[in-house]
Length: 481
Ligand code: NDP
Image (spheres, protein in one colour):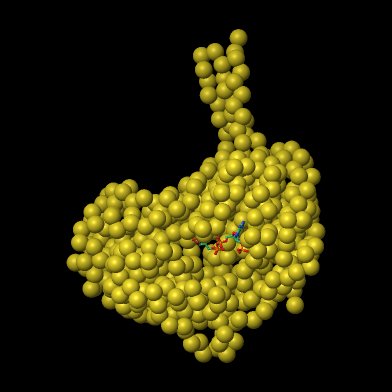
């Protein structure tokens, strides 16, 4: 049985707690590892290592750090299949998805920030009698806390810009999905990455995450996770005046306008609803459709949903795997029950999937589920479920569609489907959200701002926003003769 250890100062070590947390493959229910259960002493050790490494790492020229990012990308590339297999086993997601999204994007994150950082010029503002030079510096030791849905992808999305700007890192992945972070650490060891620059502490949020938030020498926190946890993060870190980036939950809408190309929109809506078993923060879990086309669209949507190949994540053909855990499956199922109590009708799905493969008999699989007939303000339609469950609603006109889209506490993403691109863009501008797609979903350019409004988060990541977050600026005003 594998024991997952912390990675501190370039070495793998068990926590002094002597305790372990079980790591389960959610698609089989089998125990696949034991994770060291860290405490504040481990965080202190990681901070000490990160502080010791800071001077030499931050003194490197940016081109030298860029070279390290490319070296990491090359090393990840050489282990791409292993990364995908590991992520699929840890999360229950299909191997094809783990290859296409998780493994690929983890590599791209390093390549992108290496290239993007190389193109940056120092800002300069000339006055009649003086020149202002904006000098960027690292923040110091930064804390990265990440969730289980896209484990290595979201962690590397933070690691790459933090490293290139000269910071050192203490990271805590979700205890549900520690394996690819652990693999990443072993890859760093293999390429002789400088010790102490990147440290991982595994464990539970309250005992291993909270000490990261509270530690006075950790100067910034980049957090991705649920809105309730985000509140704790903000409450703890704000009085310490840490820089904070909060990427939180969502309840995103997919809006089908009356002039949409319906087969394309139905495909897009199904993809937005059920990719990664609906466990992407950007998933469109509410579909709003113009009532004049609702019947035709619903038929097309249900055909798409019923054709999703649910099954063993190891099977190359599988399009949807399990959810992250049995406990999460129960939470998602409780929303299906709630929907019935709230007057909703199950248009498809709603039950645990019975898979033919013996090894998946105890896996956490739910059929892709579409629920109609719910009020847009019902709990099912406003609370984040984060599973393979979407709700379907109709609207009478565009104004009502905008009002319904904006009617949740969240504001992360959304997509609108129309054959009139100008109409789509105007509609998108009226939505209270961080990202809107027109006729597409999850189409990402890493230079663009990524983040949410309302209870979906504070701040933006991506391109220059990530580089700004992971640096401090000093304006140096030099008076000219
Ligand atoms: P959680 O908020 O439960 O956990 C996120 C991370 O925070 C985990 O590593 C968790 O550890 C840790 N944590 C929990 N409590 C504390 C604490 N007191 N102090 C410090 N760290 C803590 O989110 P999930 O892992 O359940 O992820 C799903 C959520 O993430 C969804 O709401 C989803 O919308 C959101 N998300 C947002 C994205 C965005 O970009 N906006 C992208 C992806 C997901 P542990 O696992 O041990 O509890």
